[in-house]
Length: 80
Image 1 (tube, helix red, strand yellow):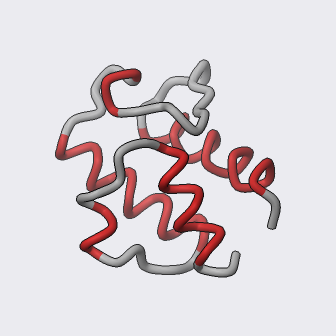
Image 2 (cartoon, helix red, strand yellow):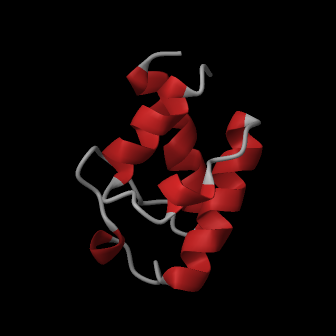
C-alpha cells in the first residue's frame, strides 16, 4: 500500500467518524484541526481505523501519535 492509498482510506474513516464529508487529512493534521476530535472520539477513530485496516494499533502508539502522519507511518509499518 502506498501512502496515498492509506490517505484515501483514512479520509473515508475520518469522514464517517466525524460525520463531515469535507475532511481531508494530511501528515500534519491533528485533533486541533477537526471539530469534535476529543478523547472519546479518538477512541472511536482508532477503532474505526483498526477495522478499516484489519489490525490492532498497539495501545502505546495510540496515546503517543502527534498527528495523522504518524498514524499513516504506523499503518504502513503494519504491512497493509
